[in-house]
Amino acid sequence: MRKMSAKSSFLIILLALYFGSILNITFWIYIKTHVNITGFSVGIFVCTLPFFMFALMHIILNVLVIPFLDKFVIPFLMITSAVVSYMMYSYGVYIDSDMIRNTFETNTREAADLITFSVVLWTFFLGIIPSILLFFTKIEYKPLKSELKRRLFMVFLSFVIIMIIAALSYKEYASFGRNNSHVRKLVTPINYVYSVWKYFKIESLANRNFEQLDPEAKLIPYEDPALTVFVMILGETARAQNFALGGYEKNTNPTLTNEDIVYFDSVSSCGTSTAISVPCMFSNMSRKSFDVANAKFSENILDLARESDYNVFWRENDDGCKGVCDRVNSEIMIKTPNKDRYCDDKSCYDEILLDGLEEYLHNIKQDTFIVLHTIGSHGPTYYKRYPNKFRVFEPTCDTAQIQDCTQDEIINTYDNTIIYTDYIISQTIDILKKFPNHESGLLYISDHGESLGEKNIYLHGLPYAIAPKEQTNVPMILWMSENMKKYDHIDYDCMKNDAKAKSYSHDNLFHSILGLLEIKTKTYNKELDMFENCRTKALPH
Image 1 (cartoon, helix red, strand yellow):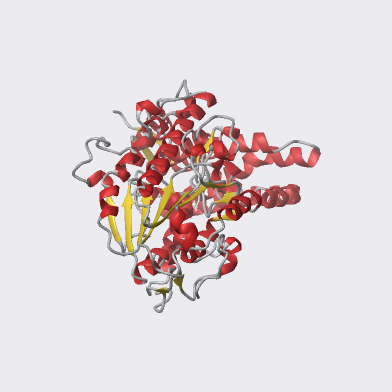
Image 2 (cartoon, rainbow, N blue to C red):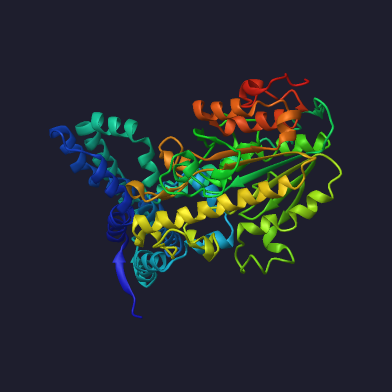
């Protein structure tokens, strides 16, 4: 291919226009839908935004377009910006350090679900083709001194443009920035470059000294006539709005409706992604004080249970326990020898979590705390999360390109995952019922919710401050055997009333489970124990 040529100054202008417009399409859509021109000053603000964006990109590219790096750094930014712009445009996501954490902590199965024909096509035309054109373009630079002078002059002009805009519309820019602080997370490539830097900064500043929460934590039961077996089913991407138990118009809970359970009407998550919510749920930190980097170097409720002579066992069928189960016995279901019945090469149906569970409970010799981490309703391939016999609602969206489906098709497919989750929970309860002499209980709760196309937002992971309720309202379900009600002195009817009248969050989990497991520890806060109000006898602490 014959090489084209372009002066560096012209190329920088061209790249600034390309980055500022095409690769920031989501930003401009946001402006179009969120800014109403109500007067002359707002009109000036809107008219000056393209010049502001160009000047900003022009300054950045004057620093990056230099010999030896121009054919590597800029193509890399174009390709990654194309991928990022697709995700923001198609799914309505924002790019921040938490989203970068999700990216780094994902696995090949989850990543593969997101690689669709649409993203490949988008990246090819908006990232790869421009990169190829740049690669075969000869960039003409002036001698070093002349080039430096010209760059400084061009950067100065860009700053002048920004200063003029500030003089004309400072109040409007300041007001827009205050009311839409999250919009900076849509400006590519600044959003993901800054977020990657922030992610590694957070990781580097984490407290690396491992913290033991309470060396004196111990089990002090009311009485001990039976072994305690407590199962926590950790849901994935299940949102409360689609549970019939909470008033949803479609019967997504055909089995649990007939069980003697407690359904909590108002529960909020700690985060909007698994990488944040899961470690937060098991931590003693509240959502507002939670630090995901430091949580890796601190014990959690599983550690306290293990140190209090509980047999703690984690079964994994999702994308990992995010460090929560590192110090307890665990089993990754897709790696088990008898997986063929439930799995393909990439993922398993959640029924595999129940495989051998009854036999396991037959053989326990001590109080036991089991966590079953489901793949639940993980998207965008909702149709892969349930066997065909649970395809109750149709038509369904049987593709990863959910934005190409109608919202009804997406919701039908998602609702089928909830029906399957309903089945998994009820089957677990049935297994526990086979051991009437045990003091057994079950708690189901999801890590976060999911957007299904409401306001053109899909999946999850939005910054918590602007996340819709679909991503933060999660279902929580409690079942107790007669022995657990009796020996833990729980008024079950009181729990049912509280579950309808009160609001709870992931902040309550740590303290509520500690109380239910009768573990005495200085980290326990009875004010956050959701069972405290319904105890007929105080904990033996």
